Image 1 (cartoon, rainbow, N blue to C red):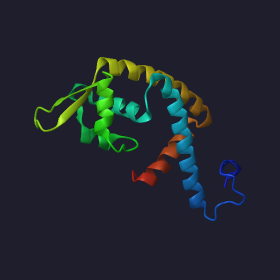
Image 2: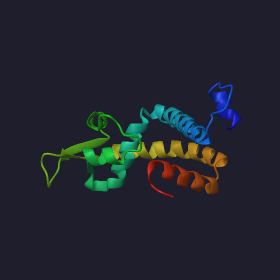
Image 3: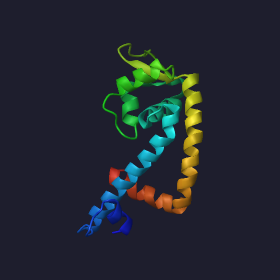
Length: 156
């Protein structure tokens, strides 16, 4: 176990199993990254979930995505994607329209205003990624990605 984790959790003795140490380390690191990215997005009045949805819709281009497709693609599942889309629509960042093939479903599309805000957010986060890359150079980042994929089912 690393001493930084012991200090961070104010523990006096290490975990009994290396796997427990690794899992808690990943969770603490994920929480630290989330806080860092939340602070970076706050001046833009964006949450990490809203940023994620805007990125998903940018990737969909003009075709857009129905709510369930957005929900499936989210990095961290959100409990109510409909309300999340409603808040983005109220700000003029997305539009929702009835689907052409199935009129019961609405399809969300990113607007020009959404694209502009997303471009600003990308620039802000790019600076954070540059700083992280100094701590986690590409070779180590690839190894970490493979390890994380083995944890969430992507395989190694």
